[in-house]
Length: 297
Ligand code: FAD
Image (cartoon, rainbow, N blue to C red; front, side, top):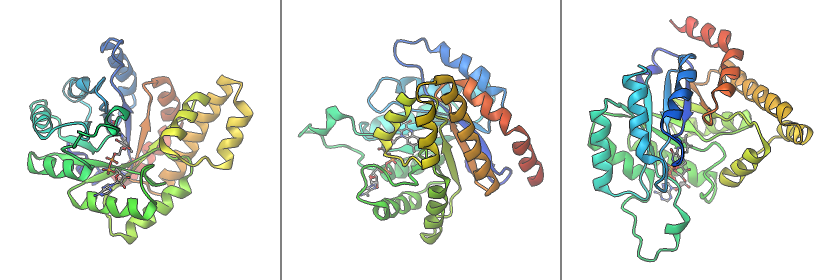
């Protein structure tokens, strides 16, 4: 099923993100993770695509199994900045052969090794160019990334929103957000989308924070804002991993319940391939999820 059609039947959708195992790990480890996630009947599972090379070869293989063997809808992430038109077109063919109908169209991060190459002229500079090629070469439902706090490279939020409008107008069916910890920023972002007449469903990306190392890395990569309530938790339980994990899960649940109560289009849980964390979240929102979906049908 195309994800764009799900919003007509469900509100909110609940979905999970997983990533292919790192090079040294056997591919089968991911299927144990999916076995455990499948119990919670997600509306779809997304599979990330490595920017610099290492894990991207497994994206289609894993997405294909999710769709064709687990019978769960899937979306394959696809990045373009280090790719070529020929490679993108052959990847689209491969996705069609595997019955995969949904693509998250991304530029990808520019690897450090490319940044200083004088001779490097990318065939794709921005995600909107990839979206045009996907549109012209198949009947996919296309999602794009968005950043409630602005993308880390952008001059400011206004410029980022201007380019988001351009990208959406090229043919996006829905958006999935970068993680955020302050729901008010998400609500302000939604208002800005309304002002710009961007009317596509927006799925909120939620990351349960379970350790300090993880949050430091995330802040470095995304520059996301940490609200005082969240900092208080980090400071209090920094040296007590189990307590921090418990508080991090509770914080994510609190965010999700608030978003759902506000009528969010979808919740996308960044599972970090740790199903036991997702399990705790899903148990906490079980009744809320079924109540919302019962009301719609
Ligand atoms: P774009 O939309 O192209 O934007 C990139 C930057 O360029 C922004 O600052 C934007 O403001 C600016 N810009 C856009 N268009 C123009 C223009 N015409 N002129 C000038 N400036 C412009 N990365 C991976 O490698 N693999 C993944 O699987 C993956 N999954 C992701 C899933 C989600 C939900 C999200 C939010 C991100 C994901 N990423 C992934 C990270 C993403 O690839 C990076 O954030 C990347 O730096 C930007 O990708 P984009 O598609 O948002 O780029």
